[in-house]
Image 1 (spheres, helix red, strand yellow):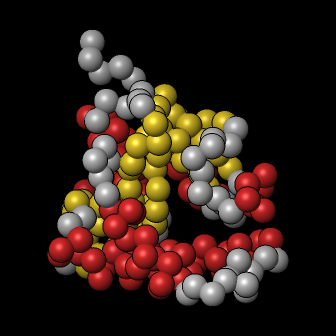
Image 2 (tube, rainbow, N blue to C red):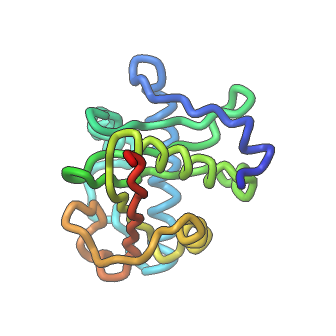
Length: 183
């Protein structure tokens, strides 16, 4: 069940001609948060030896992030304010991956994450995927609970993960098998 507040959220399919700056800003916010959490949790500063800033990395990746031949990238909007994002993309035939699921901190705990997850799972079914993968940092315990609540289970690392090699053994990988809706 999604909260009444989450019922008011709008899922905006990303069009980079319109949403480029919002996508870049939100991804920078997400990446900055992730890097801070990784540093706190593991004591590793992934940017220490990098010549690329978060903004440069995100700006260089935005086209790839938002390309959707077999997926979709959403911005979440409520009352004309962008509050989060999430994407679904093809990993391989019949398998999708949820990426960049992020709700801004002041909007967490109100059902928006669950609404986004349900929207992405519905789109995966519409695209004909049989399974959905995702990966999540060990510090994202609230997200883990959400994923488990809708049927995601732990699995082994999958080859397409973008998790940095030094963190892969410490990361959580999950999978959900989708019901066959063709019957």
